[in-house]
Image (cartoon, rainbow, N blue to C red; front, side, top):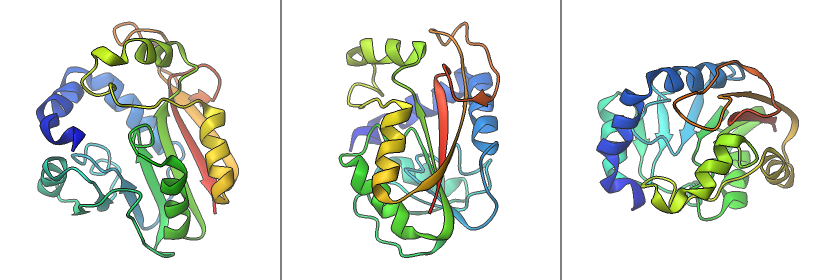
Length: 201
């Protein structure tokens, strides 16, 4: 499993970039609904815990163990294996979509798992943004992004439409082409790197 050997590197990244982490959380919160939620690809619980999401799925055993220590209930499975039916008010995915084997199947499984009028939130680094282009160009050198597939805003919305979602909203943050000189502001989607797209069932 890709992330089994990267737990300490993953955790260290957030310690090294506390402001980026804080801004990503704020951006997700801008569209996060109330209710019973889950995170797909919960990782170490870095997002679920501060966002008060108490349940998630995660294929990496090593990552899941850390999330469990943070108080998250985790089932170890992939997004493609997920088989819940109308259980959740919302589902969150944070940079998970770029690592799944089958993005459409993943989003279809999320659709099935949501109650009527439930929401899916997909947070990701936009390929068309300055930072996304740098990540794509240098991904062979990255421990994390070597195996990632980056998407544009339109790519994600089209996948969500195919799965049946509607009424899309999009907010973004992180402006610039380097982690060292980013500007922060939550706005409607245009040129920012970190995007959150919300669709309704």
